[in-house]
Image (cartoon, rainbow, N blue to C red; front, top):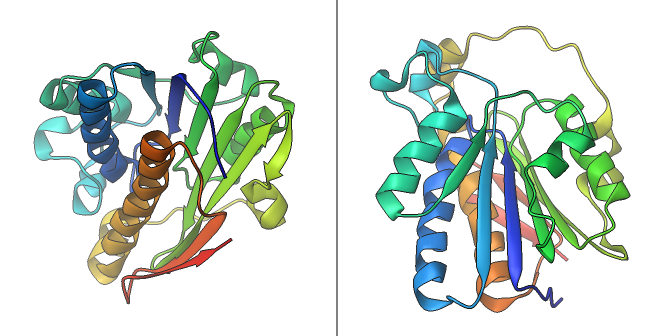
Length: 235
């Protein structure tokens, strides 16, 4: 499926387990596109209100020097500097679709919203933005447990051409009261979940890479298993 564009907004919501591994991949891609596809313009913004805590060091893409700092700020500075690309950051909690629009360039002809969150409240906000959008939008959602998960690509251009995660998996829009989990202990007892996060990031990158280099979407959703390093595409 072809997705035409000349100016793109990329908004990534969530910079933790999956999102933290995705940022350097996308930053490198944008550096490459800037060099070899200079006729297109790209804007990349990270959204996350969390700070780096000691437990995050066990399975997220942070180091001890990052402790106490905002996740989006750390990643935007580190990888923006490393790959010589501009990466914006927003240090607030995503509460409404209107907030997303404040991070967007109104002159862009394609918006890419990437959800790397572990809560359905934020998914509801992104789903509402997708539903209400009057401009072409690709909404990529990553959802995973300790070992398995799925990546869903929604696409809307005047009408919905690929259903978003909330339509394929309605439970993704149901808010739950989850018990607090010790992330450090969880990572130590289940080290495979680090692989699941990195695998999810790689799959998202592959989708965005094809979209921005070839101008198309070749998959609707992918299920994956971090234990086996296995990904199954669904068209």
